[in-house]
Image (cartoon, rainbow, N blue to C red):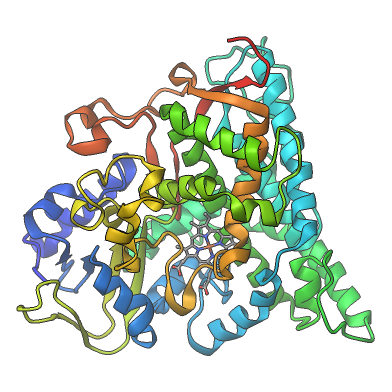
Length: 515
Ligand code: HEM
């Protein structure tokens, strides 16, 4: 792959530039490098290859056709070890197969009990948003929905909710304490805070590559927040293990009300394996789902005609108050297209990395050119974010939000012949477990359920830029950029996953409310 010529010894300037882009930038990488070098290149930092690609046929090889030769690898694992241990998200080979096969059955069929859980917490968060909006304040949708995903995840994973919603929603930064009732403002539970701290720390490690231990000279930075996480999970695990040990018979089949932990203790009572697995699933599933819902709401606020059409579909297929069912969600083609189009423009995992085991090649996009050489033990990062917006793959309107592209002839023109151009959930043997069961995809069901409930209660959404804390609106310099970055009205940032920097403050109109 073309090697980038940086300006300093060993291309260290590129590492610093990348760090800076992560801190302040749109998640489109170093755009001037893409413009100069094309869709794949070699950063070659300190004389070590560090490849980057946004070519679908490369990503297909990495994730699928050459799967056995591309692993998460020891470097990646070391950055996450104190948090994720050897769980499904952080292991390779036999250990990964063991974890994946242990967890997969839990996600392989639709459970009514999950919709019971979503409904309970959806009602809670919608009521809280309504009362705050009625009092005249905007709400931070991202914060509210992250409380919903944390409470519902802790309940269906181990049957013990962290009650993050009960801490109340935060007020905007510019509301004086006198207006904000004491105790309810700007607090989130210790668990939620510790949980996001560890994710920020490990994502910084990934970006610092093998240099990360130099940034933690006084010891493991995750230790403090992990103590809080462990203190919460420890007693729950202990109880579950006791129960698992006491059970004399193993049920043939999972019952609908079983939590993931109930299921896992039938297979092992090793506390480390259990803790790793539960935390891995929480990290993989919670922020990705909250991020997607936040991005849908952002895009609906800027595209009221899409919101109106989606509400029409909800009213026709479900009605103003009925509870969605798995079957009714399956029929809602427009809803699915809205979610897919959101995942295309804002994939919650915008950037990912694998490491080669043996030396290999990746095909050139020009069949007349030689393939690209990949040496052994080389990290290859790939960006779904950049690939999802490529005009040569998605057509001239690739940067526009238009759910119809998943329904009209553009689908057959672009996506059907090249399915690897759309990878919000990855692909191949390691495809997201929340998505792997096709129609029974857990992630789509949770997102659909929540969106239906929201639009049964609200008829419009608008952004409240005045409520965003200073520095959390898109930087003025973006206005000079090309494409949608110049028009963006929120600040997408990334740690392990993508999120709205400073939250997404919105106002919403309730059904029946006169505007
Ligand atoms: C819109 C929501 C979601 C998105 C966009 C998403 C995306 C992804 C992506 C890109 C990966 C691959 C990461 C990698 O291998 O490097 C992944 C893996 C995974 N996801 Fe999701 N995810 C979502 C929701 C969920 C949910 C709700 C769950 C479970 C409750 C879940 C469980 C997992 C697990 C366990 C893995 C690791 C699979 C393995 O390595 O074998 N995800 N997800």
